[in-house]
Length: 638
Ligand code: F6R
Image (cartoon, rainbow, N blue to C red; front, side, top):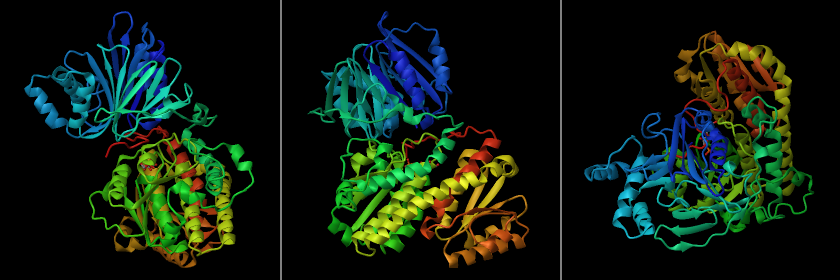
């Protein structure tokens, strides 16, 4: 959601900014813009286009733009419709200050009103344009640029990553960060600016993650960093290990398909990482290498897992409550994990939707742990919920796929997943890796609390690897049938009902979300036991029911009864079942049969097949699978 790319250095501004914006396309956007200072005429050159970055690239293609400083932006509309006027960059009255912005300035209406009274004129409906005008007026009333900036941030409420370019200072960029990430890549006589490390990861491996509430004046060979009071900060670049080839499609038609197939490796790698934490220093690494998997387990089940999480073994032993907080797919992973923590660790576990959390009473208990689960580590709702919990003195831990993300800096401790970069907007491998890491963690907590012994812990790890294998093998078993007949057949329906029970209910929620977000087919999901309380009225031949089975015998019997209810009303039933679940198979119009695994890992075993089926249905409909309409990969606004 929105991307910022900036450059100051050696004349390759246009190329770097356009390439960088393309790399951030996966985050989702609806228009893109670029501004630079033309070396010859010493003035701004700017371009805005609605649609893909390619449109902007075309507009710039034939222009001889010699520039060594500039910024680009991809916008995901929040304030104002999608059009060129609302596309960034935005400017002050005489167009001598340009700004791009990620986030939302909450105080923009009152500021805008005051500025209009003092004769500022606005071209767009955005909150961002207000910032350029406000800085213009503050520069006039303060002695130095620094003093004006300190006043600016005092007046700006909300979340923002801002990058400014000034005609008056053609060798410097101004960067401001509050609750929205902004990074500086340090090169040789050049600096790369971006809101996501992917934009410049093959230009330099030296990165400064701007601290929360800070601003920086960046020249090609110098960075001055300040806090919001204007006090100088010293911060050293960190070295990152991240290569752009990690995000190639590698021959797959879509990132989503590639990521579906990467799941087994992502899970294996993440579990290896969890097991070996502490035997190496991973602090500054983004992802572990596959060589790592070949290492023998030298140090097993050390307390180092707890130091990674920033918590003590004593605190884990005393744990009385767990809160799991997340959004979207990550929330579904948490709903599944609730079964792990409550059954394996015997700890009451509450799962919260991050977007609802701030508006509900929260009763923090002593000896509790709040775990925030987020692929991107940048989801605004999740970050806001984290801030609330942090203020309640509850220990907070982030489980994220992006170790350089904001959540890592704000939570008390963090556990990096090793899923590898997830580019497709619809989450696939992050979901299965989250479920796996949470299952591992639940067992590890149980081991610490002496509820299980080391043999059970090892068996749990084996179970995870087996479930990951089943996840992959099941795709292979049904691949051809799905491609040749099933996808075509089911892509013709306009709506679906999804059912699950117990641990398969949150999984059914995830399946319904996947179908909706990438195929745009309407899907409604219910706990199967609720069917008779209303939704059964929807059952007809035109509305296939997709039911996910369980390996819990009692739940299975209940699901058989629910399947009978569907068939008794002439419903069309598709089931995802486990080997030997004959009654369900016989009731179904079609069954996907998956090998048996540890009952807690049933959803994990079915994940690949479910995702592949939905992917192929969507392909039949010719939708933009990796970038569905209206969606963004990182949802950085509330
Ligand atoms: C759906 C999807 C979203 C995200 C949600 C949270 O496929 O990807 O529902 O799961 O926006 O994102 P993260 O996990 O980055 O916090």
